[in-house]
Image (cartoon, rainbow, N blue to C red; front, top):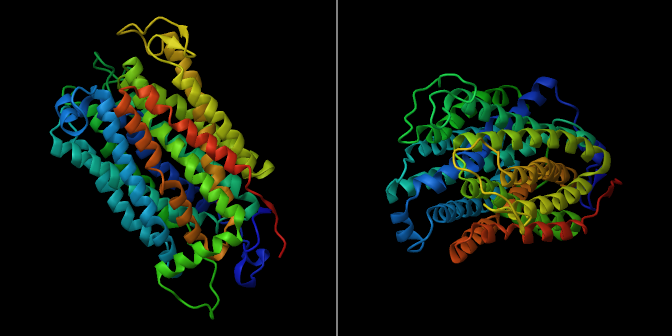
Length: 486
């Protein structure tokens, strides 16, 4: 089996003794439903529907003049505010996740922590309903606070869910379980998008949905209720599908030695951090993930906003765009999980990051009248069919590449950490895993927001993600995995 450097099995415990048995199918399916339950937050709210709506409709020019800069374009101003909110969420996640992980490893079960965070998550998502077009400053700040709180709760819940994963299957099967979990999450995002586009949101200018049906709910188009419903919808979705996780997933733990001293969470965390130099590959991996996850986060946060601004996409186009990317992402996660178990998570991560760089450059090469930076194309005709222009089609092709490899990067990262980290402190290390993904996660969104604000160009702002992805690739080359010897 592929594992990490010396120090993996602490306190003289052998790898064989720490190897868990495979949990029953009901438990594995219920664990994967966590990704299914939380995915609409990322798909509907953070990426494809609510974020573009916030940037293009909630924030209006008077607020831009107060908060950003007089004369800023509305979309650029909204993108900047959303970026700053994402930065705040990332900073809070970085501060809290390692301490919660350390506390949970030594103090009882992990699912009760997730129960409390679930309530916080539901409250944050429900707040998004307040985001009416041209909302006053106080409402905008309240909506941003709801987004921050929901994102914080979702990421902290994943620390505990990831730690529980390591007790469900042998290490040789972690890649497949992690990849399948990501795929289930993507399919959850796909189904949620399809429900919104096919049953809730009418086509612009029409009274029926994409499937030609009357909307299940009567939504007021003037106040953009079809966009605002995404937050409460994601909350209801989560409340339903998280139930099997709490009922059927075992919260297995590696027992500590009876002679091992008990410390405070802060002391436990400090001891864990001090041990990292003895596991150099694990330390380098955490640093690499810290950087390339920044770039990945920025792509997710601003990709839909950029496309909506360039082509004037509304809820229909954004829903179709999201469905396509989510579908290819699900298949990417399934394929990546199997490649992970066969070739190792490091290989999957490096190859996927290189593909992300190509896709990001391709997306940035498209504007209203050009593709590949210099090739002129006809501008999209207002009112034309979705994705009928050459620019939209090229944009979509590069976005599909990004969607195909984004999930394997994340799933293989989770698998690699599970293989490298000491089993008896796995929640602490997944806390550090979340820390590495968020401690500088404000940098890429901040860089995008700052460059967008200073230049007035969304393209220049988005170009900041390339530096983060390329740096991550270089660092991953120094991560070493080898067969474990007791």
